[in-house]
Length: 168
Image (tube, rainbow, N blue to C red; front, side, top):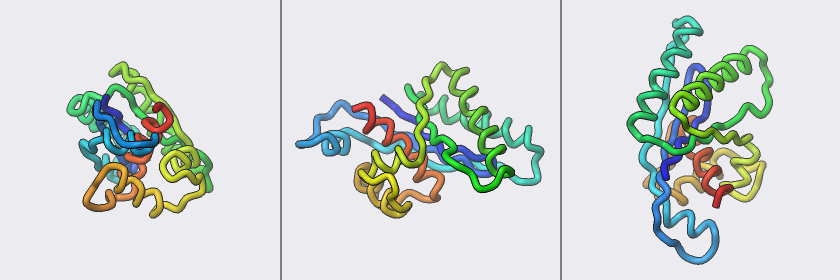
């Protein structure tokens, strides 16, 4: 099963793709998950601030559609907007989330949303974990050589992992 994790935004949308293999791991739930996963890829969908908002959203849809076509995920895990300090930021992120939901629906991919607190809890066992703690855990679980960068891509991988951990 292939899971596409998404950290939404209009300027930067992070994505991470994980494949759950059919291998059996060692003792314990997290060990089973760790032994049966492969990171297929991660990165950013970026839009330029000079573009009109509608053009930025169109680019997000087009790039996400290409990612879906390439990896053929069975599930999309989306980081949800938990809280916001600035309404000017919350509205574009919500618009990006809407485009992501529409793109997934057009491709008949079920979407599962997770709040940052849920993601941190699933990955580290502590809902208030710091970003670097989550990133180190992602590196370990996915057996990566280095911590995934940029942060938006790492957050997307964490979101995909949260789905797998919650579902197993």
